[in-house]
Amino acid sequence: MKTSNATSNEGNGDDPVSRDVGNLREHYDNAELSHGDLDPDPIRQFDHWFREAQEADLSEPNAMVLATAGGDGTLTTRAVLLKAFDSRGFVFFTNYQSTKARQIAENTGVAMNFLWLPLQRQINITGTAEKVTTAESIKYFLSRPYGSQIGAWVSNQSSVISSRKILQMKYEELKRKFRAGKVPIPDHWGGFRVNPRSIEFWQGLPNRLHDRFRYVRTEPDGEWTIERLPP
Image (cartoon, rainbow, N blue to C red):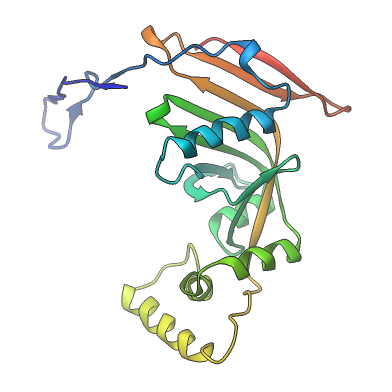
């Protein structure tokens, strides 16, 4: 990918932060993605691209933007880390008292996006989320570093606090509490699995004529069909 040297123009008017960034653009020049390149199974295709992202030494290739919507239609997004995937779906872990978890309880429909700019690729996934088993959550929790285990107890995610000092004091308090043994998994912490309904693979190409292929799960047989989308 070649970085444009164009600079943005300062906006006019009385708004001190008004800026025109229309001249910021990148040239996509990767190889084409054809139907014949795709695995019939989108999870295997995801695994293929994920391995290539790892081989390219991208920073946190498992980082994804997760979109959720509450029962009232309020939308929120945030970056989370994918921690496992297989034929059943895509797994991430979080605080069950967080905004994302509360919204999933009201509306199980979610969307995920992986953006790998150095490879000029992105993957868009839609589906439904459900909690993983307690055994799965415990297994992953025990694999986390000690500090991250303590952090899961410290953070009342999505709540309001007056200062960072409160977090630091609680962290030190819990370190003393659990120093004699293993850190137990909090009741309010665990995983979600996203069962995909559609998975789109996007490959950037010149002149914005990008290649897009979307796998869609058909009902009731659960088979996948592949369709090409315009850029």
